[in-house]
Length: 86
Image (cartoon, rainbow, N blue to C red; front, side, top):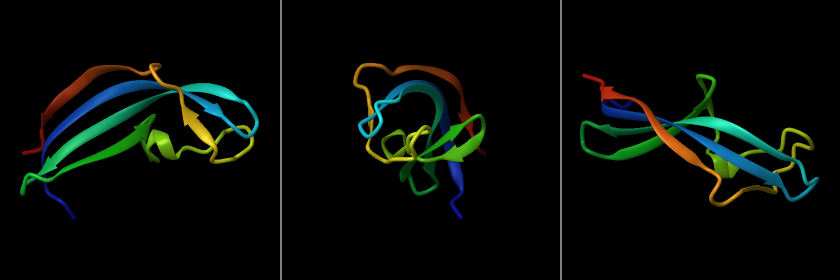
C-alpha cells in the first residue's frame, strides 16, 4: 500500500463516441493526481466517488464495446480540491 503525500483532485468533463454503435455521451470524471513519499506520481479516476477506468479505457454504456473514442477538445477541467494527505 502506498503512503500518499500530496493529492490534487480535478473534475474533467469528457465526451465519448462509440465507433461500434455510434452512441455519444458525456461524463464528468474526478481525476486524482498524487505523489507518494518517494516522489513517484500516479493518477486514479472516479465517477460519483467510485473508482473507474481511465477515460481511454471506457466501455460503451449502450453496446458494451471497447471501441470508444474520447472526443478531442471536449474536456473542461477545473480544480475542485487540493491538499496533502499528511
